[in-house]
Image (cartoon, rainbow, N blue to C red; front, side, top):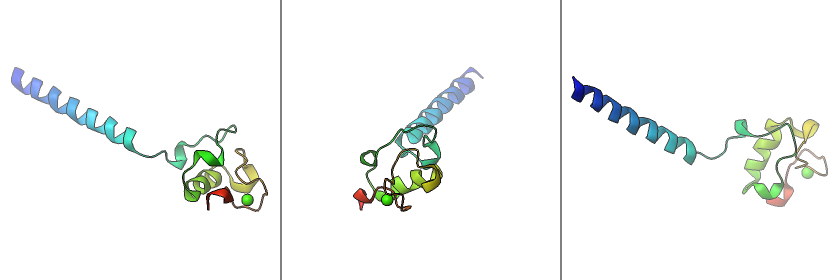
Length: 81
Ligand SMILES: [Ca+2]
């Protein structure tokens, strides 16, 4: 009985450790993006696609809180092309 409990604890510890490692190794998703204040510059993104995801997630040209689209043509971070 005691062995079973220890076995279960070990399994849980390994599983939760694996989950947290997996979670930390994920790239930042646009759903985690901050939209309430100016938190990013174009230089914070490594690709145009990443910048565009955050730009669109936060409301696009109508809510360009990060000023990713300075010329307001609807295309964020042309510098990353
Ligand atoms: Ca633009």
